[in-house]
Amino acid sequence: MNTFAGKRILFIGIGFYDYEASIVERLRRYGASVQVFFDLPVILRRGVLAAALRRADIKALDFIKLHERRILRTARRVPYDFVLIIKCVGLRPEFLQALRHQQPRAEFILYEWDSLARIPGIEERMPYFDRILTFDRRESAARPGLQFRPLFYREDSRSVPDCRVGQRQVDLCFVGWLHSDRLEMIRRIQSLAHSQGMSFCVYLYSGVFTSLKLALARNARNVHFRPLPYHKVVEMNRRASVIVDLPHAEQSGMTMRTIEAVGLGKKLMTTASDVVNYDFFSDENVQLLRPDDLRLDRAFICTPAVPVSEEIRRRYSLDAWLEDVFLARAAS
Image (cartoon, rainbow, N blue to C red):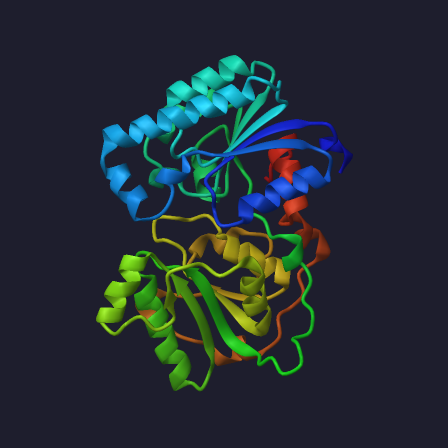
């Protein structure tokens, strides 16, 4: 993709597992020069100390200001072509104003892979961007100027090789963060799967305290306090006939898990009702789960997926995402 050759990009992310690293690696492969920062300093991003400092607003603000000054000092050495920011959770409007003043030629792009309602203070930050894209189809339809661009699958999710010799195929699979009512839903699906003689591979991850609390309550089965490396997530999903998706109730955009199911050519069972409005949707490959009437359709789970056209599948690749986000080819 020669479009990115020689381009200078300032990337400010949230440290979302290694999805952001895959974006940066791809841009560099295509010849772009990419400077990477996180929106919050390391001391505020994870762990017990981070949680305590975030609650002490004054102290946290001191760390944030120091972090922002460091970004500005580094960025002033380079005239960037693009400034791409993911979510924009921890960055203050004052910082964005200073960065725009410092980089008058750069195009400022904001990509949201969470619902705006879940990002405090986002409204006052939005005016500092030239373009804003969202993974949420409903939000883009409700707000003029907000471009719709779903998430992506990585190239290592693209093909579906045969399972390794001796590696058992499973019926259902779920890997994800433990939040909201996910554990309750997982337990209900596990019970249904067991009653119908089907296998359900689960890996939930959470903080240490939540894991310990569940352990004390004897409800920590399948719960871990660290995420799986991405290659292991792909391996688990490849073994599954159906990928299960349980997005947050306040989120209507399609999750990474959903898009990776498209990349892998897998069937999907999801509680995300808006999935019916996507071009990859078909009754043969996607089934809606209703929490108020939870059922498992054995015929759906045990029959092979119907191949999605290469044209549709390519729209959800990382390369297509880069084109849309940087080159203003947002999806309709």
